Image 1 (spheres, rainbow, N blue to C red):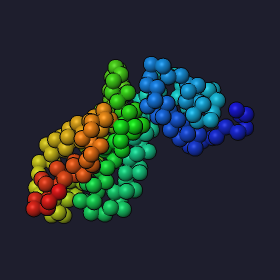
Image 2 (tube, rainbow, N blue to C red):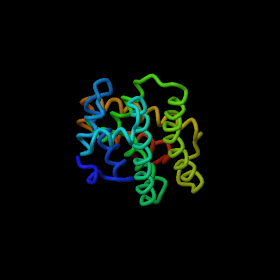
Image 3 (cartoon, rainbow, N blue to C red):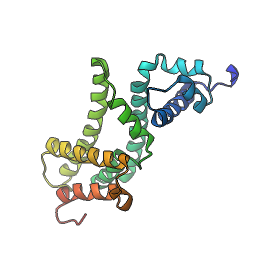
Image 4 (tube, rainbow, N blue to C red):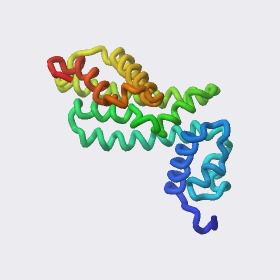
Length: 201
């Protein structure tokens, strides 16, 4: 592609990252080439290398970008939801994969399957903790407003995230039960039963 036509700045990085998410979800990491990402992004391989550098940095960089992008969207939706109950609904929707072909969740699967050095584990821990922190903030808000039952917030968060992670793996595997029922509705109802006693699902 002509250098003059290469996208620049944040738009170029966003295109490169989205192309990488798609390529990783489809091809995995073993056979992934920078040219695969370049083709999807409509850029030159050199331009992709400019954004990512070495291939061994690719997964963590793409995951960190994906999460920042997802969390920005989550915050916009949570702000619109207004109430803690509404924000909890948004949290569950953003945590769970949208379906078996969810590319963002497939990226997480690829990253967690890799071996990482201390710096890589630190990045992953911060990203995982980011989900816990967002849920804990919703729980504290609901408790402080008297809209949620009193629960041990750290313990509830561990259980809630473990449940959501298990359901997510089921969805990505393609378990038939989630083709016949809504994973989002099931998970949200389970959380609401404890946080909103007397409310049916």
